[in-house]
Length: 360
Image 1 (cartoon, rainbow, N blue to C red):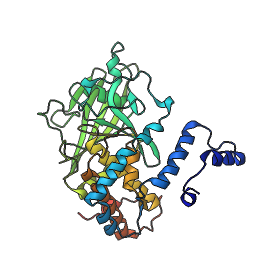
Image 2: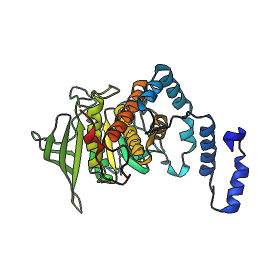
Image 3: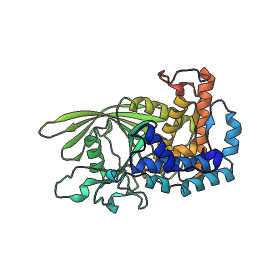
Image 4: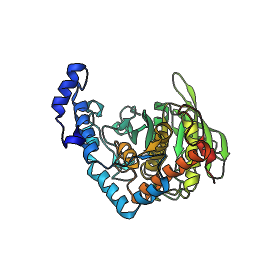
C-alpha cells in the first residue's frame, strides 16, 4: 500500500487488523515499530543482496568511497530509531557509570542494554558496574555479552560476570599488551597455572591448544562458598589483531577463527565477546555472526541492516568505513565458500562447518 500510494494510514490499518484479530498491535512499542518498518520500506537504503546475485559486481558497487560514505551517514541518521524502540521496563533504574572502570570515556553501556553484577562487597555500589552489554544474535536474543578486555582494577568484575552469568565460552579478539596500563592478562597459563581475581574465585589452567592463528585455553573455575562449584570455561583467543586496529590482519584467517569459535560457543546459551575497548573488534565479530547466520538461513544478506541491529545497545560498533567494507567482503567470501561446495542446496538445519571450504 505505502509503495503504491506514497503513504499509509497506520491507525486505520491497525484498527482493521484488530477487527480481524483483537491481539494485533496491542502496545505502544508495536505501534512504533509499525511506523518504523513502513518508513524503512519507503525511505531506507535497500541493501539486500541475494546469494544468487553477481556478488563481485555488487561488492564493487557497494564498497566504493561514495557508497560507503552514504551508508555510514544513513546509519548515523537513523540511530535514533533504536532509542525509540527501548522498552522502559528494560531500563536499569538509577543506573550509574563509573569512569574509572571504562577504557574509553565515550564507550559506556546504556541503561537499556547494560548488565549489573551482584554487589561485592555488599557496601560497594560501584561493584555492580561493569562495562558490558547484551547483544542479540541472528534470531537469538541476548546471545552475546560484549565487554572490554579487563583492566587491572576490573579483573575481579570480569570474572564475577563470568560466574554470575554461568559463561562457558569467552572469545578474545585483541592481543594483550602488558605494557599498557589499561590491560592485563586475564586467564591462567601453563607458566602461571593459577590465579585468584577475587577472594571467592580461583582459576586453574587445564589445557592450551596453540594453533597458528588462535589459542584455545581451557580453565577450571572454582567458586568457593556455601555451595562450592567448579565451572569449565573455554577461552578462544585470536592472534595478531592488535588494539586500536579497526580490521583483522587477514580476512580468511578471521573467518576461520570465527567458524571455530562459533562451533564451540554454540554449545552454550550465552557467550562473552571481548576486545580492547569493547567495541572496535567486537562490533566486527558480532556483525559477522549475524551476517553468516542470515546467509545460511535466508540465502541473502544486508550489511547495513546487520550493523543497525547490532548497534542497538552500542552505537560505536562498526564506526569506520573500512569495517563496513570488510563486512561486505566477509559476506561475499562466505557465500563463495557455500557456492563452491554445494551451490546453496544444503538445508538450513544441516550441521555444516562451511569454514572448512574457505581456501587459505
